[in-house]
Image (tube, rainbow, N blue to C red; front, side, top):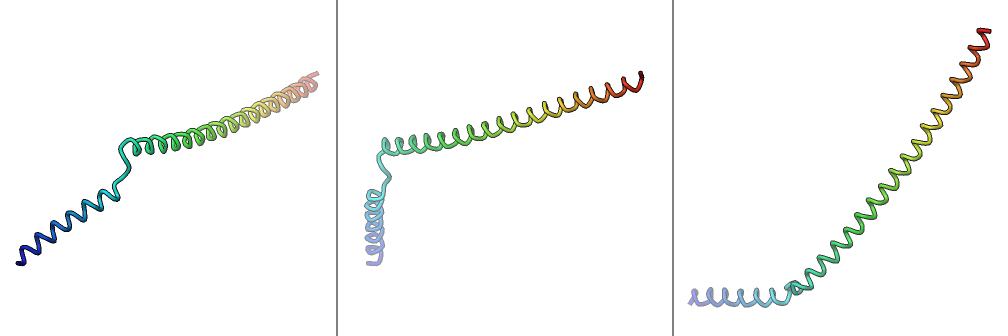
Length: 92
């Protein structure tokens, strides 16, 4: 009689598991694929926005550094010319 109860319990457990599996199963494959595609597109858009933002930031920093470098170069040239003229005036 004990074996009968075990078998009945196993069969009952299998039936309950199958029923729970059906009730909590994920959506159909087509719906699941659409969800995955939508989420993938959302993540791709987020990554693209972050990438574009990073590129813009780097580009702005590059432009700023380039301008600062040009300003330093011009300052150096003007100081060099000033010093050269002072040396020329001393030689005369």
